[in-house]
Image (cartoon, rainbow, N blue to C red; front, top):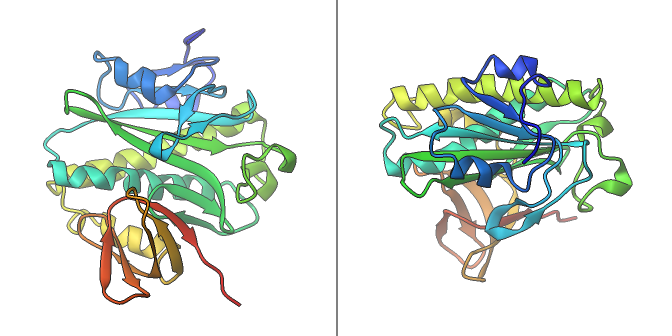
Length: 264
């Protein structure tokens, strides 16, 4: 971690009691998890992350200066354990709103459980990790800001610049982070005020309205290695994806890699 400052993120700094920008680091999530003195809504941000993690321990890397990696610390503040699974979805709907205001072409949607897409292509991934003491969760987001097509990490990825988002990379990074933090704070505060109830807070209704996975045929690779195929019909009170399996029956999935299937 090098050159800590907040000067490059003037808009975003207004939404955090402590925002630290570093020129480069291995993982913003790992660094913030290790900082036990970090207050509620602390933010660590970089545009050069060298050892980021995705879901299931996958490594996430990108060319320096053209992506955003940011992590925010959320203290439990009375949230019951069973509601913590909603934090990645809360971050997802907040990021979807942030990016939808910036892109000029394409439809921005939330893919369960932790991706934001433009026209079905991944532009942002989200990873939430609980601190060892259980008192806080760090929610990290990685956003492709200005990657060219030949720099994209996968064939199903995209970047904001490819969909008409304007401004220098530095300006775009601050605008994305500022809008995300402002919206995420509101969603989390509503969830806390509702005692962690996703219905009373309005979070579940919002996710149901914005999740592009619903109504789709899906393939879900479960942590056990099993594969589930069927139709994604809903998201239940615990944030699980409800799948009407092709083999019969209804399965509520709490974790898994989801592929949206296309049939002619």
